[in-house]
Amino acid sequence: MTLLNNDVAHTLAEHLRAGTTEMSPTDLRVPISHFVSEDRAARERALLQRLPVIIGHGSEIAAPGSFMTREVLGIPLITVRRSDGSVASYLNICRHRGGRVEDQPCGSKRIFTCHYHGWSYSREDGGLRGVPYDDFYTHVDKDRHSLHRVRTEERHGFLFAVLSGDQDWNLDEWVGPEVDAQLEPFGLGGAEIFLDRSFALDINWKLVLDGAIDVLHPKFLHPNGVGKLIETNTSVWRQYGRHGQSFSPRTRMGDLARAGEDVDADFRLMGSNLFLYPNSMVISTPDHVEFWTVWPDADPNRSTTQIRFLVRPEKRTEKIEKRVLRSWEILEQAAVEEDWPMELSIQRNAAAWPHGTYLYGRNEQSCQHLHRQLAADLGE
Image (cartoon, rainbow, N blue to C red):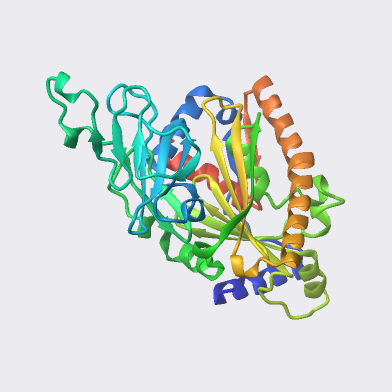
């Protein structure tokens, strides 16, 4: 943990002793229509296509020559590990007549070929390599018919891409030094995916993120689970540009602080949720890192949540695996049985009565952040 996080631990202890929490200067009211409006959903997806989003983890294409395909925000992608170890992404769309040039979810190939008319492309640069019956075309300029490139960069093991094809963005500036400082100790560039689960939900993506980072509900919605492990309504929020981090004390820290004992940034005493705008979260634990990505659907009433547990291979013992699986059981119980049913009821209520606003109080800094940043980026 960094010195910053030790300072956060001391601040949390002061709030626990005083029965207070950090607060925003003002409340925030978010129109209920933002969760059900098709127009708002379309603008949000268009915005996410223009921003650096995390499309995967480097361990999915660990070996040179490996690739993966997936659809992100409706856009079909091939992401590859080139021979020199760098990463690249291309639209999985043939430049001839629009077929997909790779159908397999993953593998290792040097050339991608469209099975419609046989046009083939290089893994290394997406360049057009083969055109069957090319003598029968007036002229096919291979330099002008490469696969469309989607700039992709790897940082802390995460694969960042801008789906619009914009090449003019700076990952150093986007991530920023504060986020780098929080991620660096985990060594996620050397981690592997231990567990990968994906959930299609009839819930707006912003409600899913709200629920995952909310600090007011543990003892009410999870009285027999997470509510026994985490303090309710005590948190510290740190904003890092467009990103931010919520720190919450575990009940053990609450007991120590209220007894006048010293506390520090020990995993057993304090947890954190690092929000990587616009739609990802990194949650730290002693044995693994919990990584969420929540994707909006074209339908504002739907979204897809992907949860991955990342573990460094040198830490992966039988004992650690059992503890990580136990962590998943706790998370699954909280999310699947309690969080998402509540959010589903909110979504249905919003669709039934999309009038007025929802209130985000001064003590809900973490939840306010996403909505304030989206509004700013959408020019609202």
